[in-house]
Amino acid sequence: FLKMIKSIISEAVKKKIHIVPPPDKGGMDMLKVLIEEEFIPTWLGGTDDYVFNPKVAYADRMCTEEEGREYYETMPYHAPS
Image 1 (cartoon, rainbow, N blue to C red):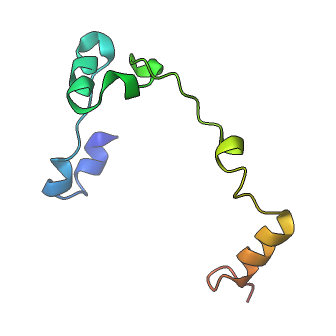
Image 2 (cartoon, rainbow, N blue to C red):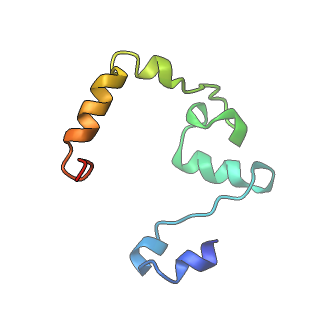
């Protein structure tokens, strides 16, 4: 995948891409240089066990089905022709 996209991205963007090896091959040490271990998820070898729950995070921002349809239909690029 990376070989395929490398041919279409600029050198400036290529310099920003860092492939981090698995934790057992030194990846954790690379991550710790950039991110404190408490913020690295457990599935990457860190100690952060937070699980995002969209129903809780967006509870006060949810709209009804009717409100969603009205918004969708009034957007210029979505409005029915």
